[in-house]
Amino acid sequence: MKRYRMPEIKLEISEDLQSIPDKIRKKLRLRDLEIFEWRVVKESIDARDKGQIQRVYFVEFETPETLNLEEVNDTGYQFPLEEQIKRPAFPPVIVGFGPCGLFAAWILASLGFAPIVLERGKSIAARDLDVDNFWKYGVLEEESNVQFGEGGAGAYSDGKLTTGTKDLRNKLVLTTLVQAGADPEILYKKKPHVGTDVLKLVVTNIRKQIEKMGGEIRFSSKVTDILINNGKIQGVQVNGNDTIMTNDVILAIGHSARDTFRMLYQNGLIIEPKPFSMGIRIEHPQKLINAAQYGDANLSTVLGPAEYKLVHHCRNGRGLYSFCMCPGGQVITASSEAGGIVVNGMSFHARDGINANSGILTDVRVEDYYKTSPLDGLDFQRSVEVAAYEVNRNENKPPKTTWGEFRKDPNNILRKCLPDFVTESILEGIPAFGKKIRGFDSPDARMTGVETRSSSPIRMPRNQEFMCNIHGIYPGGEGGGHAGGIVSAAVDGIKLAEAVATRDRSED
Image 1 (cartoon, rainbow, N blue to C red):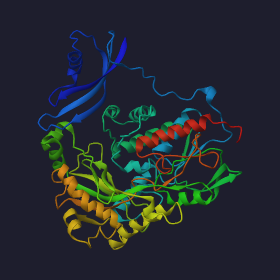
Image 2 (image 1 turned 135 degrees about the vertical axis):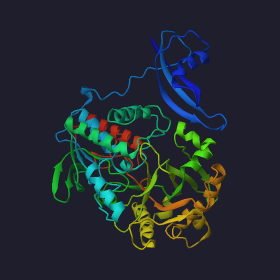
Image 3 (image 1 turned 180 degrees about the horizontal axis):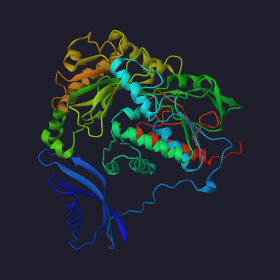
Image 4 (image 1 turned 90 degrees about the horizontal axis):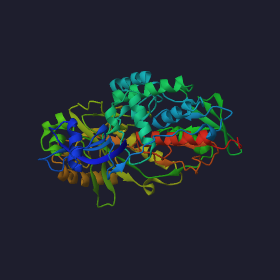
């Protein structure tokens, strides 16, 4: 029996998945072909012709016949072999429990390393209470919020799992998520998502697996210093007093741990400035997006709520683009520091909310903010967040407006918060987006600001062993400037765990 992959199997909206075997036979012109154990490995929607929208599938199937098709020999992810593993004297420490830290801990626990995870925030259950209190009453907990806590910032998002990488570890990440409770459709959807409601359950289940395998997760445990001797990590200080000895530290701190970035820089860790993005959130009725993308808003009952991805090249040389588009979602306040406002998008698995929202961002270049320190990007981010806080009378509520008001009024509340080049890009780009999606530039489209945390403004360079300039420290994920989303951060965490598990221990 051989397994093959067949691309481009097209079904009309009314056709059932069970017609796929016959579609394969027809496409191959082999009417009597025996087909066994077929499964969908990728599904997408072709809506270019609004009069004939189709679902498109890549399918794998088994047959005893020899065919002129791509043969599948998927051995799956291979854990490091026991003879490759070098056991350390002390358990490895993982700082942060977002996707990068979560999967680093899962791999190391699977290999019997008993990692210690230090998460400055709280568990999902306790974190939910703090976030809800912030959204309802404006009471911000700076160590337990949308940015900090179990699951990282992704726990309060749409839970998108799209990635541009082709790494074989991607499948391991998706399979692990499904085993922990995510919808199996993420294994084949072209644009898979989990949803914040399901993702919280999934993260909790993976944490329990890690603990069962010998790992330890300590919440409300902030790394406040690192102990270095002769350029090598010796341990970490927690909450200003406790010390944990270790020769391996994985930094999975996320893109918002500004105080940790500063502490690391003061201790000699090399940090480089890098470009990032900044802008606002825009909302439209989901029905408007459905109608524009499908031609008929009612098709969303079959195809799901429509999405979009938009890019415009502005005359000022910058790009304006949609980011983290949330069908049927909501805009949330995602602040993590007192006196600053940040927003993001979030949706549940069902994506059944009334509105669609997306970040509308433009690029921020290093020369826009760099003065004397590689950490200047942190200050630039914060200056915009502080402006958003102050323009709204020092309340923990984000400034809001409409596209019509933003466009016409130079003194608009949001325009007061944003750098001129961001405003300039938005003013040019939104009408251009309106030509691609009808109604996108309607005057009553709602805008909320500011979105500044789409990525980290710093990068921690690392060598071929995945270490930074301090031996034994492994910076990773979004905070280290080495990932850009849930899957890529998780994959990076796996790579760091592999590096820790197999590195030469003679220098410890």
